[in-house]
Length: 102
Image (tube, rainbow, N blue to C red; front, top):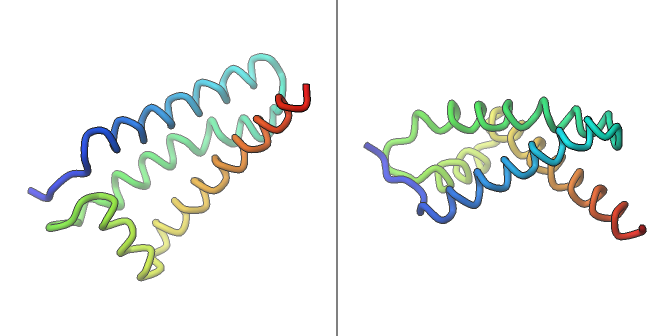
């Protein structure tokens, strides 16, 4: 059995995804930022599945170390995962910037 990331890191990761998904659903229900929020609602589950399935082959590394190693090898699944992560961060930035203006 391969080692795992620290519990705190894993908890922060899943809490961030839960808050992101919840906020996106609220934005869709309130009819604000609909297109980008629907993108988030679709991409968060895809992101989770890609990362879980992508890290299955690891043997002696934590999930994060394996992910970084795969990134250095330019594996397609990790590039797609990185793209989704960047989209989520940009979505949060756009959302926070919009609310800061008000």
